[in-house]
Image: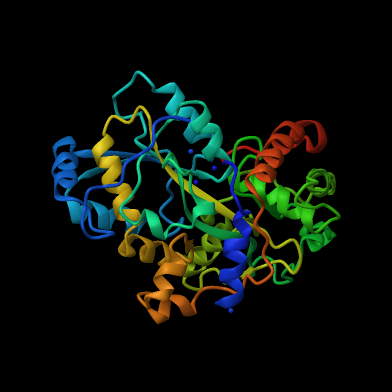
Length: 377
């Protein structure tokens, strides 16, 4: 690929789910439609008149976004302009800032960013409020009350391992320090800008003496990993894992599981939810305040937060934000539910904790770890 003061920490909502189941400004208004999850015809007409939606940082293999985007295009006949699929959350926010006065193809209409980026983007006046028609079924702790941003899905940090290259599969964070993994471990982004990488550092700290309020152990862990020569200073992706250039990718569980499907046994690979430091990360959707195609952006949100859109995310192994409501109504296909991994014990940090972790890790990475993580040439 995100927050504010909630009455209850967001992790309460999801921990309950896991146990039971083994973006200041004017308030937004709800979509005027009689049926939740069904886009209003006037909105569809307005979106079609705009003709295009511009997205950013949506890789094909992330939460099944290829099928999500293709289904949206087929359903509404819009063109989807996909910017920089491998960008991080910080890059998405910067793209809004850089294109405030630009209505051309480089200006994103919508963003999908880490939870800690929601409130900060709202505070900077970068987001447009909008409440989807399924608003009431999004947990209160996972959305801005005025509709500036709303949680979309979550995953748990995991290890994707190419077992053709490394048959000795690490089972926990501490294992990554072993000499046998020299030059084999990589993050899925730059911890100075990428939400996924920031939260990987956060998660590692939980397994190495840290807590949801103490992030320094995560930086120290990655310093050890870098000093040992185990950390590869490249941004990992599934292609590099498949080639064996990055045998161990630290990534969200849904990315790893989608990769294994795409490998189709060549190479062989496994996904490991670490034994300790099980960390769940929520992402959020939002519309740019400067969106060149605001109606297409609203229609995109209606689609994503419909049962259809939520199910498509789930096909990509993501836990959609409306999962509890959909389970209660028995509308999730059993075969999809059966493929989701056991993530029991995963913890969900609060908004304040995520904001603090983001600040500490992005500013401390260079001085503590000193590894310049870059995209592969």
